[in-house]
Length: 124
Image (cartoon, rainbow, N blue to C red; front, side):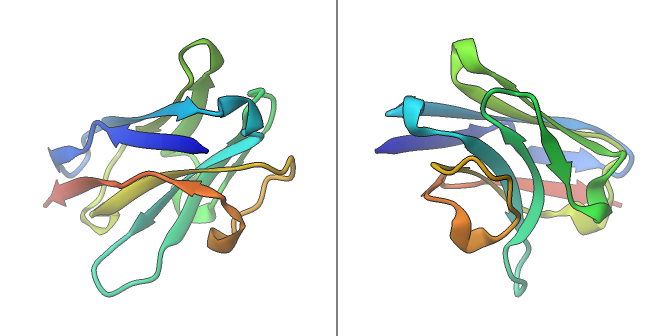
């Protein structure tokens, strides 16, 4: 099993930045891809970005390309999401996730492990 714990959420003004962290523990050797998702009230969970656990490949959803950057530190078993130029519509609960398969994919159901989420609120 793998446990994921997000941190770094909070309240920020529009145009500001936040960096989310996701610490992985447990059977981390089983992780091949990690990703970030978010869910706003009344909306479905939305894919944002993914990165291969080896760090060689990244993939972003169009709404966050150029504003968000995903990275990882294997030595620390930690995943990051740097979020810049934040907008009020970025307000949501942000989740990290991990999957045991090598292919990077944006489908919610394809991830095996999930964190509990961290709230990000962007004020206008």
